[in-house]
Amino acid sequence: MSAPDATADHHAPNQFALLKERRFGPFFWTQFAGAANDNVYKNALVIYAAFHATTLTTLDPNTLVNLAAAIFILPFVLLSATSGQLADKFEKSRLIRLIKLFEIGIMVVGLAGFALKSLPLLFTALALMGVHSTLFGPVKYSILPQHLSVAELTGGNGMVEMGTFVAILIGTIAGGLIVAIEPHGPVLAGATAIAIAVAGWWVSRGIPLTPPVDAGLKLNWNPFTETGRNLKLAYANRTVWLSLLGISWFWFYGATFLTQFPNFTREILGGDEHVATFLLALFSVGIGTGSLLCERLSGHRVELALVPLGSIGMTVFAVDLWFACRGLHEAVPAGVGVFLANHAHWRVIADLLLIGAFGGFYIVPLYALIQTRSDPAYRSRIIAANNILNALFLVVSAGVALGLLKAGLSIPQLFLTLGLMNAVVALFIYLLLPEFLMRFLAWIIVHAAYRVRTAGLANIPDEGAAVVVCNHVSYADAMIIAGYVRRPLRFVMDHRIFSIPVLSFIFRTMRTIPIAPAREDAVLKAQAFADVDAALAAGELVCIFPEGRLTDTGELLPFKPGIAEILARRPVPVVPMALRGLWGSCFSRAHGGKAMGGWLGLRAPVDLVAGPVIAAPDATVERLQRDVAALRGERR
Image (cartoon, rainbow, N blue to C red):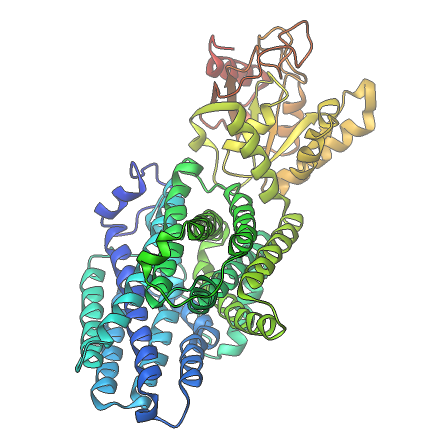
């Protein structure tokens, strides 16, 4: 059985329905069990070492805890490159089952370590669990595009992110509770880890066959040279590289928060260990909720607009958390009931929950983006490069937080600094990659003004050069199309519309191509055709309005011959498209030929409809005019 085509026209009605399907359900529960087991064992070991350090070693508990963190993260730096190669070269379902069998063996070593009170065995198992997670990471994200349609990727990634954080939370709590059971808690923790590993292997048997993307790949076993090669592969695609940096920043940001929760709870909120766990749960639930909401907000698309929205929320609520902590003082450690009884703490709760939710908005589209924009032949190696960067950022986050706290910052001030740093990092990425900012602006404006219904957008090719032709009804046309077509578009636009204040900034960010009639500016017209040809030669998607100007009657104006010249230079497929319902809005010329004279159109229903692809030889001006007119119908 071969894997389903990721571009196939099928998708589950919602992301939860994916759990019932073999192409997703077994994989989801396999990764859920693995994430939970990592944290059951790791937290059990950390607590066991913290409370029994004197019977195990001469090292102090703090050193042991930090050593455990370093041992677990080291394989991500050293072995991610190798694991990326393995995921690209071999059939993924079999590779996952082998990794799960490896996990069972590791947990047997861990159980022996607990039973024999052997720190070397316990840390060996921890290091091997790091290896296990390193091997599984590239498979975890590269397998999704082979089994899910593009319309399902955001929902599928949202489910995986939600599952991961819920599993981390459950594993962390379970590991701590089980290891504390007297007198056999450590042995029970080891046995629990074995049981979870076996369960993970059992459900992995249901993962369908997933063919290798590069079976002929020659493995490079040198981790250092292969790490460099993977980073170069990622760096070659600017959008993917900046997305990887954005994901790594998220882990820097999130790890800093999670690390500070125990001391933040004790020193600022006056809570006990149960309150710290409660805050961890809130943060995890927030990320899970935000991850799940991504599908609804994105409309089954990889919606990059959610990334800036997420980063704004991550900054705003981190800053508000600092304000919420002003006036709070350390008190006698109290439980969750006393903590919740203080109304001043509810603002802290809301901030942590919303930071997590906006973090979900931020991270899910970035994972979906690297899955769709990476070359399938080395997608797993791109994921491996991501894991390498994540590990490095996690290490740096610990150093930065420690340095800032040593410099005299309080924990709330650290959160404030982190929120401001997030704003700077986000602005830097969006300036380097304006596509994120453009889609955010288009998404906000369009969703505020219109209720857009779409049909036929799957006809637009997922990759490669193509021209989209559409009727021109209002000044908002380009914004609506850009807000709903998944791929970035290069618009060809009348130079006067291109120069409208405010909109001009957005159009420039979208790399819009201004054009003028030859009688007005022959040089600009010639340059526009040259720019269109260059964009198509680069495999981009170009959108033109063949009428040449906004309609002032509401009817379709005659198409200009420019499309014929474009196709004569570069014969690419053409997708006819139509907008319906914008005539009469304030952005149309329905009122004496002038804009801004009609209804504002807040949440007005608008249709965006695309027809079947037309091959270049058949895409005559007359044929395109007929098809666009038919798509528009009677509704203007």
